[in-house]
Figure 1: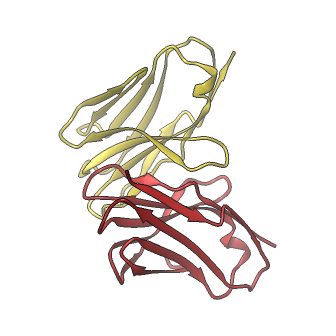
Figure 2: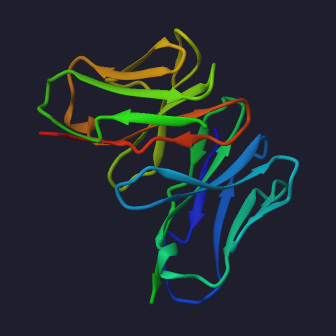
Length: 111
Length: 111
């Protein structure tokens, strides 16, 4: 059974700082890994998807990496802004096609 | 373009009452459909997924059921709600191994 862990659970940084969110998983037999953003009381917004055969994906100030051999993924946010404040969720798609989620990292960027 | 709709956005129900949450997808055909629940202080948990009309897979034993009467319609139901059914319910769709796209969710409170 896939288990997904996200560290840290919460993070508070000053505006402009670069930061890294970590995700680890126990089963490397995955189709892809997704990073989502969730604002309070809202649904999920997909940020980046990394296919199993890929090592990283970039979108604007966001960069996500995937290392299946070590069971790790990182989400790098450059030059953080107050608007980046949200909960960030890592999720893996396995053979069932459904996603297994981590518990998230709650990010607060202070202006 | 594809869109996903969930309703209602919020719902307050007494213990023992029935439940029906609806999710519809537009702009695609034969999508994979999912119901997730996010309980307070916990991560997202997959409840049901469907790869076609009438095909429902349940991930966890519970007080809920799901149905897919039409290709792009997914319904989450209960005959008698429990206090533990409170949470934020999210519907999602995908095609193949492409990213999952989420609705805005239904906040369910049981009194």
